[in-house]
Each structure stands twice: as structure tokens, then as C-alpha cells.
Amino acid sequence: MAEILEFFSQSSSQSRDERILRLAQKVRSGKGSDRAFEEIVSICEKGVYELAYQITRNSEDALDVSQETFIKLWQMLLGESDFTQIKSWYSYILRMTRNCSLDFLRKQSIRRSDTLTVTDSEGETKEIEIADDDISSDPVRSYERKEQIEAVRAAIASLDDDYRQILILRETEGLSYKEISDIMGIEMGTVKSKIFRARNLVKEYLQKRNIF
Image (cartoon, rainbow, N blue to C red; front, side):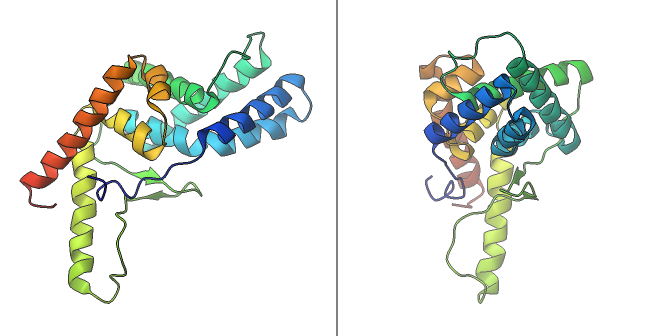
């Protein structure tokens, strides 16, 4: 299973949260608030968009949800609420994203598509990639690799909403079980069992098609 998920990346959530906190304090103080908020958006926009897309399954809707999420974050930072108790800023913002996404679906009654994409560090959409050695000189391996990419993407897209969202939060965003628990509003034990089940479902999907 590790080979299937090698394309996922992780980052230091602690340093990211500390940076967001410092920027949030600048926004609240009013000193360079616009620039500080732009930096918060820069840090979070990739993860916010990816989660919004996984829930809405539509790129334009995901952009709308992302914008709504950051509007609500801006209003919260400039409001009277006490945000000193927020322990994980990134997971807090993703929880806002999830809530905005679900609200959007309830209002729009969107028909979801059957595709799965991710965005790179520059905000460009791309297909999930599987780590591999140099295959440029081997057309056969290149073709097989494309088949594997499509199969993994289809396997993840075939998961039920909760399984797909949790797998993305864990493997793509590198969030802890506790952070996912806070975002999804479920017990940590449930998070662990759902991640285990989601990985097995992906594995079973691929094995049935003799992909891995």
C-alpha cells in the first residue's frame, strides 16, 4: 500500500500553525493586516481548494467554497472572537472549509462528477502521480504507469465521501488523527478505523483489476 501512496506529500504542521498564528495576530492588530492575511491565504489555499474539491467534486464550486472560507476567516479574525484557544490553525481552517463545502452542497444540490484531481504548489491542477524510476526510455513502462495513475485515481474516487475525505486529509495534507478528528467531528478511534478501511478499499479495488 505504501507504494500506491508515495505520491502524497507532508509538511511540518507545527511550524505551519505557528506561522499562521503570528499572521492571524497581525491581522487582528491591524498592522499590515492585508499583507498578513494574503500570506495566510498563500499557506492554506492549496489544502482548502483540494478539500473543497473532494467534497463538491467541481472545480468552479471548489473555488467558490474556497473564497467563502477565506471570507469567513477574515471576518473571524477581525471580529471579537477569542482565537487564542485554537491549537491547530491549519486543521481549524480546513474544518471551516468542510463546513462551507457541506453548506454549499445543501444549498446547491450539486450533482457530483466522478473525477479526482489535486493541485500543485503553484495552484495548477494535475493528476495524481506515482513515484517511479526513470521510465522515459521505456514506452511499455510509461504506458503501464499511466494505467496505474488512472487506476489509483479511480480507486480513490470510488470511495464513499467520508472515506475519501479522510484519506485525502491524512495522506495528502499529512494531518494527524487528532486534527482529522476535529475537522470531521468524529472520535479519533473512528478516524483510525476509517483510514484503515479506506486504504484497504483502495487496495481491494486495484487487486480486483490486477493493477498491483
